[in-house]
Length: 346
Image (cartoon, rainbow, N blue to C red):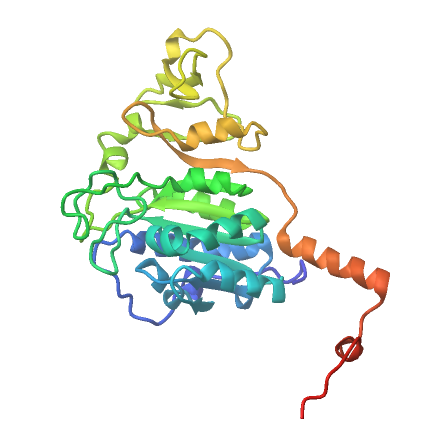
């Protein structure tokens, strides 16, 4: 698209004519609304025409998403959205590919696919809706459900530790890792836009509510009366301040404290320069330290934890193909099939 023909879309251009079939009050509505709201800006900033946008999902409440976007889309099978997305991106590298998944679809049956999508760093935007429950199948515990939580499939309490999606993404060497919340509208918009503009696998965990089977799952951090004390807004180059009056901050933990990498301190008591957030830090321990923080001992970080530039999978594959062509010529499939020993089957 030339500079003389800017891409101009409206929010309504991304609303499909399908009836939205989520439970009233579900956090999915908020996420859908903000994705639709941000798509015009995303297409303009990335110079992506609408017909080059595709949403791919697996199975679950969140996986209805492609039906509600007036774009191309695939509703695939359980946990396999990353595999379909990678194949599509390799075949059509000009497409802007979005993967929409949930804590069950993406971290349980699809966990292996998610890990390898992230480590390959192919250019896809991955939105993982986390409500700590299986909503579509009516309230069984999911990989992110809290230890001891009583659900329809764990009447005496969950006996497994919850999976930390952010730590998993970092361990998979994702080049972009962020977290946001369904009810933090402007923050959600910002994270969607940041992910869209990142080249590589951009992973965004979205904490959201299932008001039918797990109502109030994140009220301990996003409730109006507690969020100032429980949420840490990460801003690149800014001090790690939080609290109602920004009177608390994170500092490197003492060597004598083996339980955490970052410690909470009174901002007024710190005399040395404050620790500032560096989303491109080469110190992986710092990112892991943030990803593993949670109340009551620490605030829960939201924002971009890690954003670094790395070669994408499809670029590296294309370079290998070009190198092979340079060394061996364009190739001849018929000659390859006829090469070597052949057998005739009667």
